Structures are given as C-alpha cells and as structure tokens.
Length: 277
Image (cartoon, rainbow, N blue to C red; front, side, top):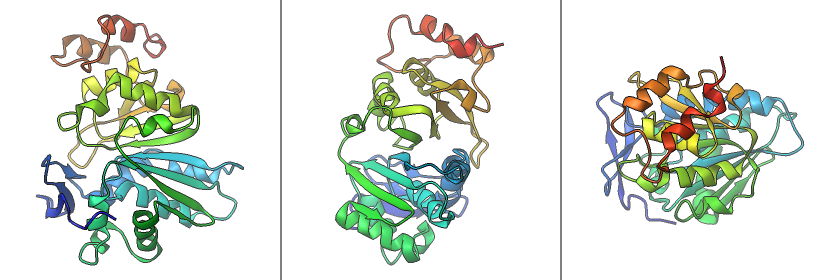
C-alpha cells in the first residue's frame, strides 16, 4: 500500500468542497463541486450506469476507470451497483493508475467520510489497496497498476462497455490525450460502449474522432463548462458534434493532438457523423 499522503494533500476549494491535490503537478481532482458530486453527475449519471445495469445480462458490464485518483468515480459506481436488485447485471470495475497515493489518503481515518468512504465502501477501497481486488455478489473491483497506455493495452479487445476517462489534464499528462492512446482505448471498447471525460478541448475531441469514436458534447460541470462524451455508435450520443463544430475546428489555434496525421482536418471532416442530416 502506498503511504497515505505521499504526493497528495487534501484542500478546500473556493466553493467549500474538499478535493485532492497532487503536489507534483498542482492539479486538483474534481476541483469545483467536489469529488462526490462530480463523480455522480459527470460520470455515473452521464453514462446512465443504473439503467444499463438494470437491463440485466449474463455477463458483467465492464467499466474502465482510467485515472483512479482518490477513487471517487469508482466508488460512486460501486455504490450504485451494490444498491441494484439481484436480477440486475453485475458490474466489473477496472481501475487504472500508476499510484494509489491519493486513494490511500482518501480512505484514511481523517478523510474517509468527506470522500464518500464509509461502511462497505471503505472496506472495498482498503481491500483494493491491500490486495488489488475486491468482490461481492454484485460487484468486482480490481486495480491495474502501472503506466498508461501500456496497462490499457492489456485489456482484451471488444470487452468494455463504459469508460470514465479522468487522468490529469492534457497540460500535465499530454501522452494520455493523443490519437494513439485513444486508439488503444477504442480497441478495448465493444459495440455500444461510451466514454465520458471532463475535457472539452478541441484537441481532445479531434483525437477521439481520429481514433475511431463518434464524439458529442457532454453535460456541463458545476461551472457551466462543457464536457465530452464519445461512443462506438453515434446514435448513443445525445448531442453529437455537427457542422458548426467543424467550423470551430478549422479556426482553432490548437485543433489537434501532437500525433495527428498531416491530413487530420480532411479525415475528421469526412467522418460519417458529420454527414448525418
């Protein structure tokens, strides 16, 4: 287990919410409305996770939690799964991160309640830290430690249903927001999968498009800032990007990730989602 507090600290944001701060990058995890509210709104609710579990199926629904951090997104999904009735589909959460420092601090006695860790949820998170896995009749939660995208490349092809993409920002961790990394993610996603992320940057959206996803606008965060949803099928998106976004792309000062091909604009413009009328 990573020593609690190594590399991280708990701070109070301007809104009064408690959040985790990474000392090395200076970035806050869920910086505005706080980790519990943002995890519910931006990831669990936006992915319609409850409805998808309620449909039932013999195989588990696989959720890739990319950027475990303080565990806020994963534990929100875990709690929802645990509340579901017996006929609901099982949930398998796979969390990715190169360190468990933030989670170790979040589940410490001083901070566990404010980060949503109590009762069985606290047991689950501490078991994940000590054993890398925790399982109940309803939910499996396991950790894939190491550096992305190499850990993500180990995910079987066409095996995942929902992705919470929540690593540090493109400024702090540019390698995780490239066309190449999203192509690795696309390989892991089965038909009907959706991806949810806080970034609405033009380069993020174009990287997802170039990697083979359909892309749309996501729900706003607490500041009104737009987010992004992607999917293997454009019909899974409530607000797919359209022609007006292409016009903004052409005017953008930072339209593409650094590994975009030379003909990136032509490739994006020709994508099927922009020919839908």
